Image 1: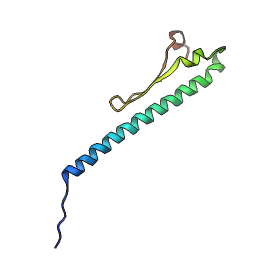
Image 2: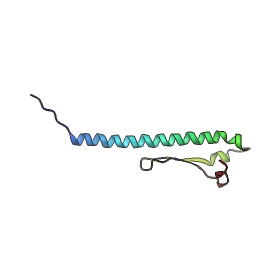
Image 3: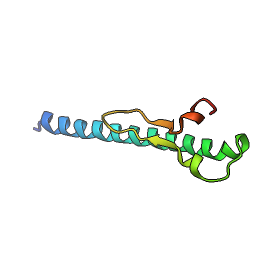
Image 4: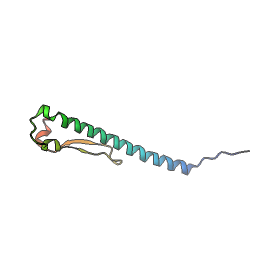
Length: 85
């Protein structure tokens, strides 16, 4: 004769860890996507503007996502370019 048991505490621990990993992976994916978008905007700058220095490109930055805030942002620090891009 045999018996099968289920460890609720162990299952809950695994599920809590899995949730953390999913949140981390989601934040990482969002941040990487935003960085790809930033790189694409920077790559297209010379086609739209006369670029003499790297100052303008450095003003296009990314605010990374994290586990608590699953939102990544591509932002333009120079307010004069905000309406142009």
